[in-house]
Image (tube, rainbow, N blue to C red; front, side, top):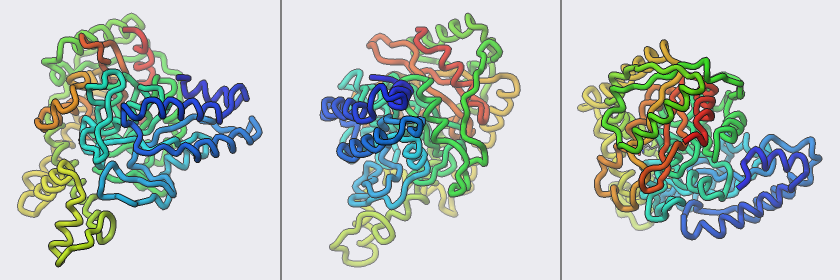
Length: 466
Ligand code: GLN
């Protein structure tokens, strides 16, 4: 499939029409979606109508993303369209306004082509927690796509679209990007507005683009990022602007204490990547992130606690599924809240427990203190290096149904991604090599606050070099 930037250039130059670009995407979606289940809904007619409007504009007025079809994760509001968070809880809900990212995509003349499947309320690492069935990995249909933005990553990997948006609370952009062999970034916390993103864990959630390569990712981030007066957690900064960044001036840290006991294929990819970067003049340093190993347990306490609070509004009285046959108040809550799937219920219960007055000191507040210590680890590390190189995931894409009975092993998928959300720093996952089963390996580059340019430059230097 054509790269997003090529589509936009050609549509702006009048070499192809937005209508042709949209038709190509729709044909590919129609062909592959029945197998992959990456899209929950396709806005076919509307996409073509929008494409015609873009084509009708004078060429000079066509936007930076002219004619690019975008898969929108089903937890972002697109006015007048269903948003389900892949949950039965939101059956029948239609968005009443546009998420800020949607506003920005539309203002740049992108075409939102459909709703991408995901784990229910973004809780999961395999997309098997969707109420509408798992997403299959386009590179091997017996394997998971990763999650929770599995539909977004699979749609890009399968060439259905050249750009998808995902959300990342603990790895949900980077892990599926790694499993599907595409590029995904979790930007700095506050880089991209969260207005119109269904909240999971508000102190960790961030929206980011998934694309086939780094350059497309840069283009997309420059459009969706920037200050938003309607989101108080969005930084008062100009949108991300691509800057040329020479990798030979950069020093990269490898946190040996955090990434020991690696799977051999991933260890060998990491070693090779180091060699490629060294050949390009990058300097390497061993660094230590002594508390990063506590990021995962701290994450599961903080994320569940915030989720239990954020999802309290879905009680069928204010928002969400309303049972018609409830006898009394307790029965009302039991029946209304039964619309959540098992993983969401589990997290709400765990979060409610760790926030309760009897336990908050031991769980939620302690986990927040651990987060502070991890943040300091990163501050210290970034005083000596420009970026940090790790694997994106401990394994490549696993088989469907392999881990959904063993929750701990599923939670471990986020081992290397979660620290970025806890520290609030950006991290990009990019494909580098294949394992013995010919599955893509994802490497990850962490950066300091708002230094997306450096990590993009390093990821670009690795592109196609394996
Ligand atoms: N897999 C992690 C979880 O289940 C991360 C989810 C996410 O980033 N949205 O919580």
